Amino acid sequence: MSAAHDVRARARHAVVAALLTGVVVLGLPLALVAATAAAGAPGAPAAAPSSSPTDTASTTADPTDPPATTSPATPQTGAFEVDDAQLRWAVNDETNNRAFAPGTVNFLSAGKVPDPGRGGQTIVDGAWRGTGTRAWQATAGDVRIEKQRPDGGFATATWPGLSTTVAGTTMSGTNGPFSGHQVVLDGGTGQVDADAGTATITWRGSFSVVYYSGMTFFTVSDPVLTVTRTGATLRATLAGYASSMEDQSIWRPVPPRQVDLANLPRVDLGRAGGFVATPRYLGVRHDGTGDDPAQVRTGPAWGAFPASYLAFMRDVGSAAYWYSSGGSADAHKVPEPIAVSYEAGAPVEPPTDPVTETPEPGGTASPTTPVNPTPPPSPSPSVPARPPAPALPPQPSASTPPPDLTGPGGSAAAATSAPGPAHAAPTVYAHASSDTATAPGPHSGLHWTWFAGSALLLAAAAVTLLSNRVKGPA
Picture (cartoon, one colour):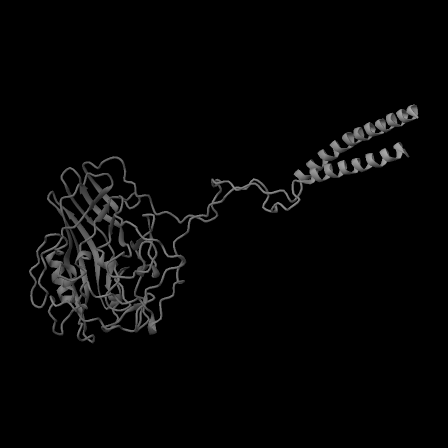
């Protein structure tokens, strides 16, 4: 019995050893194959996105930049002639402002705004409401109106942009931000003597200054710049129409005449490319006559435009809009700097306004006006009521809230009439694997453990079965 028992034991041990060897030999390759298959399975998780943007080209075309504004590096010396000089001026902030009458704005136009035929008329969508005659232009010969862009550059003005700020938002009040427009005249001819400090430059062309969307306006033609050693004067021919706040049927032409648009301090003609100078205004006294409100000579913004300019505006009926009269718009009457470039193709850096607001998405609203709006009465007790005479609507006090810009019938102006500012290209993030990779499922990455476990269970069952067969009955 002992010998037979030993034989059975050795046989059993041999079988067990063979099975274990088979399990190791077969199980290890199966586990490796399963692990390899799991690594390339569709259910493998995608790598986390990179936190840094990739350098990809934007599909949005950048707007065309205006001519470079970098001045020539070499200073001007001696006497020389100019045949394409440029004059650039925003006039003042009030000329780029929302007006106090409901639904009206102040703006610049290239060329001469035509006679509407009677008083109380407004310009809507670039044409006189009463006649449909084209009244606003962005360009006329060598004259154009440009609007400042959010990046500080300039582009040709559009009708919708007259009622929006530099950032593209609708002007919502009468204290800024403003529309940021400037009139530009090219083709100036004349002589400059940088050493002597003298110059004479003449421009041919006209532009119009329009207030209350056309209820009052005047034209400026053929400006001439005269420079001496002590200062400079910008003169032009002005023409316009007299109107009355109390009686809008009053509308008569004011004969053209030469006036001083601006008196400048001493300028540096030797500066490379041209110069930028701010007209005299602050501290300039104006002794009004007749029914003109008295000049207010307190505060940081008191002053006046030149006397001949104010005399013309008195005939038009808007003198109080060009000197400090105590109204809420006094700070906006101060003239903006004037830029003179000896070559239009290489202009000096134009003056710009800072942009501190966020552009509205989408388009910009068009300036629309109600049907011949009636100017609001002045709530300011400091400005006496005027008898029926040529006059602009008086300026409300700072406490008077401005009316909303609305279209005919009181509906809000459409916000899709013109494209808004270009948006920056979106940031693109790089992914390490395909976008079609799915999230890891409950079996992803675990195939080899399932195969190995199954093989070991089968091996254990086989060992038990064979062991019982070899052992036999006791």
